[in-house]
Image (cartoon, rainbow, N blue to C red; front, side, top):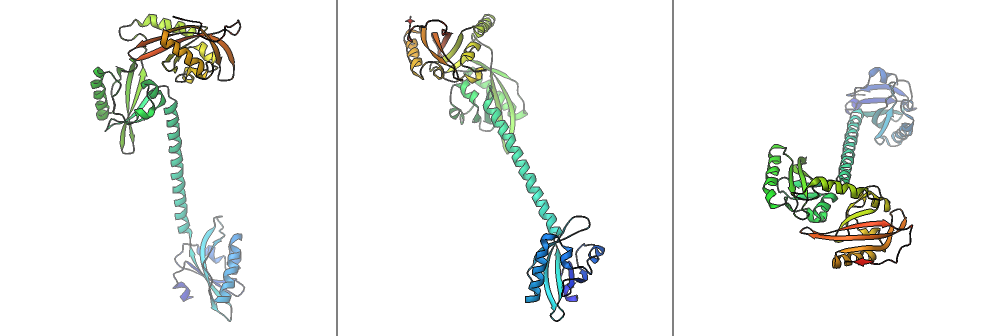
Length: 380
């Protein structure tokens, strides 16, 4: 027994030929003496869980045949209900009597460390997926937001991200906006004020809102800033919200606002597009015609998505507008997104200014009355 203890074991079991425990010696393990003493007189195989019994049988057979068995992990049953993991080697002590010593190491410390590692990995996994979900929600909100948003590197002033609303506001694809130094496309008189706001935000973490005017569209927008820290980088979150300014500087907003409300309430469809036929503004009647619910569902799309044969009728209409500036009673077909189709007449006018050409369309459903053949009925 002394040689077994010298093997630096946590527990040593002395077994007879039949595998019954005849003596127990505890080494450095914190196993309960009373608990282990209860194994005396019992078969070693009866102290372990069901899945470990085949391992006990194999170790005893290997020790009887070869003098020593492989190291095997088994789990002892515990009165507390928690299995005790041990790793044993069975050694034949006396060939004539068949006495076998089972030298074991307590694995509970290792098991606890493994469980802590698994718990830490699970916690990291949960944190990772929580951050992924947060990032996904941010990306979704960033993409569907109707407000123009730019993410700008605070140190270089370069745009690192831009959402579709910003691309629409600046009339440039997102890929053209990313990488540009901000400010851009802002009237030169406002650029020093914008640069000062950026510096103030970087230094103090807050800055006042600022109203500026864009060069391309001549639209007034409210510029507001927030500071975002991402890893080791500092970013500006820049929001650009159009200001209600229908007539431009010096215009009388009250009549213009009333005119917009009237156009919005028209029973006929009313649409404003750019020179390519891409929708900028539409009233409720037009949304009903194309079977959509919100302006954002049509803004930025081509009128040819709904009017006439794809591209053909709209090209004729736009060509006539380029030549004459106005079209009256252009007969064609309008298709809704859900499959409805109706005969319509379109009257249209084009206006050009420094920002480019804009086109207004008045679209009337004439399905209930006789419609002339599609074509340009008149032009001035």
